[in-house]
Length: 242
Image (cartoon, rainbow, N blue to C red; front, top):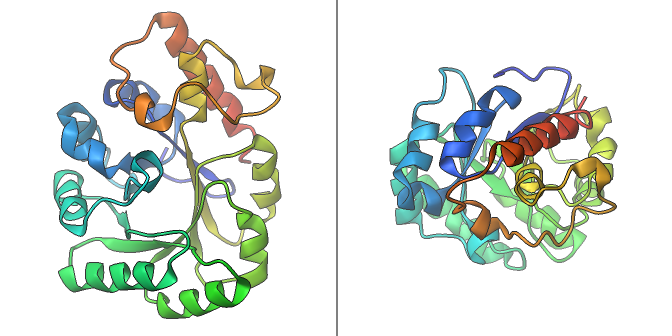
């Protein structure tokens, strides 16, 4: 599934071998850069993706607590040939994030550049967006009031990606934009809860899963029942995206 016209495109986060089981359930791929470098199977999944299937390379901020270096990001990109690289960012530091974007541009890598929306105030966010207008895609951060931030700014980008899912209910708010934006989302929630033996429809909240994002990427194996739940969760999640 490489085309997601009329819906929000879905990518899932999972260990390398499990990603191969989920490819037909999703429209695009989302790779965590440091794991690409650490795990040959994980890297191979993205490198061998079907022609025309879009891939985003993330900077590992959510998993590691800080973005990896530009050198490591470039190394991960060389291993996977992504369509987009998410430039390193710091949520509360517009200056640092703008500088990282400029430094990534200077590398002249053969990939498009995505930027995350950062800033503490509406004025900071507006000034930041003006400085990164040359980016090819805008990413909206996890666990922030990103829908309100988007409405506040109405940035000019038509390729927009939602970094993670806090609650399924939030996705409904984005559905009116699916016909005017090329909009996508990544999440590890379907995978996490499936591996924990839980179905998403049974949960009151998706927050505070006992399996953390960094741990998720390193899960070595799973049972047939866990795999079944992961696939069911992914399909359930898709019902919120169209």
